[in-house]
Image 1 (cartoon, rainbow, N blue to C red):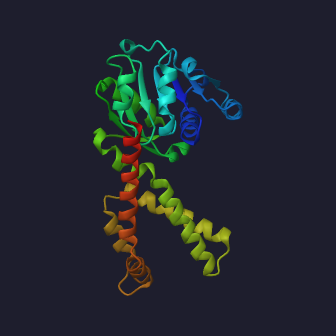
Image 2: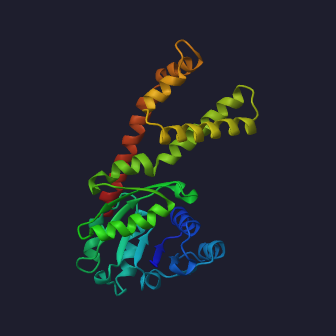
Image 3: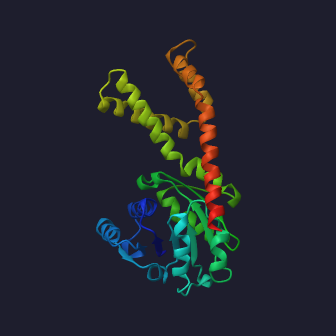
Length: 271
């Protein structure tokens, strides 16, 4: 079995651990490095896995997953400098640090050590994640295949060139928050129309689930599916007209460009 060390026990690290365990990964094949004692105890209690230091977790791991904030990458690399890493046995590092390029890691690791940059999202907690991976300079097809296999246990995986990763961050990395905001806004609007919050939540959430399923299973485009619900001069048309009047499309455009730019800034600051 592939041994995986997760460095960082924050939300994304926890989501990955939960998803891997749910997909059948044995607890003995997982270890997590988390410096905060209270958090380390919580993860050990939640998942029944070993929690240790970065150096100890990385020793003997096939895949070292760096799931920390961009500002903590230097500290992780310093800890890894004391580890006898071995690229000859297909050991590799996967970075989930938003905006941080593979070129940040490669000079601090043994010569030729493979690094893969990945951007997952939190729906992997329920096995419906979207992970995008990009190979670094020394990553081979076999490394990509291994990471694809691991991450596909918690959702779908797509491979892109690394220069596209900032855009990926803006789309699928941050994307769940956009949908949660839409659901929150729709529930609030439904309550203002006289529905109870419980009923409103049930209606909105199931509508989102059903609509997502149609998008996933249908050969029709989003535009076609929208048009099928929109009768001329009907209720849906009235609502869509207000969305357009209030700049919904331009709002999404500006927001996602801002997310892309922030990802690029984080990468530049990590150099």
